[in-house]
Length: 159
Image (tube, rainbow, N blue to C red):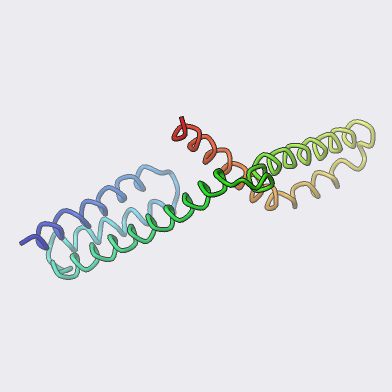
């Protein structure tokens, strides 16, 4: 009985919600995914996908959610250990990284501005070179963003 309810609510509801959300995105891949999910939703409603198969999918979703939750708990534990550490380097690693990122960004931007103003003929070459650094900056700024977010979250829980 419970499996039937879960099979009728859990997976179908998730599929329907995601399908509708993707259907509102103006992107071919999102539209294709939305249509595919509508077909799966229709197959569940018409019994082409059995209650047992839907229940198995629900169990798999629960396992994935449990795994993600455990992973986040582990990350949170390590960040809290860093905050409570008596080692000054460990405690200052995030601010040091942030300051280094800001300094590096500022040096790069001043160099680009200098080239654009005083050596204009080299500007296109420098802009192309900077463009090739976008992957490195994306990683560094993403890490910094996570650091800032987690530190803000930690300050809320400490008070």
